[in-house]
Length: 343
Image (cartoon, rainbow, N blue to C red; front, side):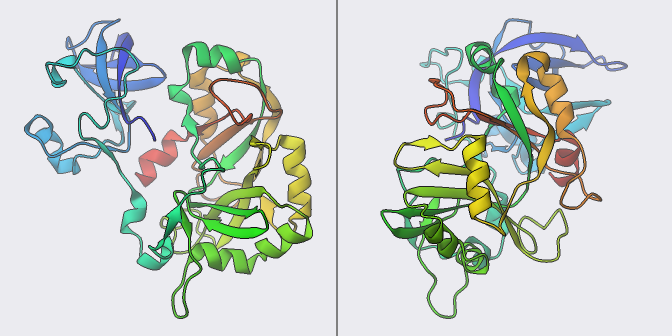
């Protein structure tokens, strides 16, 4: 589960030109506008990420006109992402430690754009829990990677792909049985007269047939469905599409490395992989986080007239890491230009 609110430390503060009442704080990799004088460098704070929805309580009443949702914003010429609160917002009997997840404690939930989409886009509400033998598709943001985690991955070679704003889907053969899943649920085959984009996509691309012909038993294919009636179709493509971004070996409990993924993409033709972005073999040690965030800005390879949502970094080879038990090191950098336009 995403940690929307955590105890973090103010790394630094810097003035904002021509502004006397606000300044820019650095919280891990995030830049956040704060009240001048409210914090000092080194102070602990409660940091809430973008996409947080705060509860309707008196202390958050100032956010009512924003429907209590935390978004990316641009003010005084600088981009601010998230919101910080002093530790006094915490219950008195709680002893805050750096890194503590306080999302549930403060009653904070995640904003879900999907909740406003037509029912049929989600697929049937009936179904089962997501298969426990497959990791869900969820990448950490680059701004949250630091300290020992960064030290572990800074010398790893990565390949970069375009992040597409759609609905993630997982298709798997588990002991010969075909499974269809959204981001969080396994979905039943719709009954006659009902529709489900995940099952429709499986049929359109003959995914089960391709997986059986390629003998991909106990393998999960994960990708993005995008197009009309999904997330507002920001890329403005004319028909719904599906592109693969990862494959998981269920028997070995490891993601396929880049070479293994290439082989699976070859076997799954004509289904394509998400667009590849140069450079190949990029090493993080040469790329400060601010540079990586700037790299996320750009235009989509799918529709060059539209901004891309961002980029995803994935390790070319599998690694052994406490942060990445399934071998694949990956994270995302969301384009600030895209956020400002589409949030």
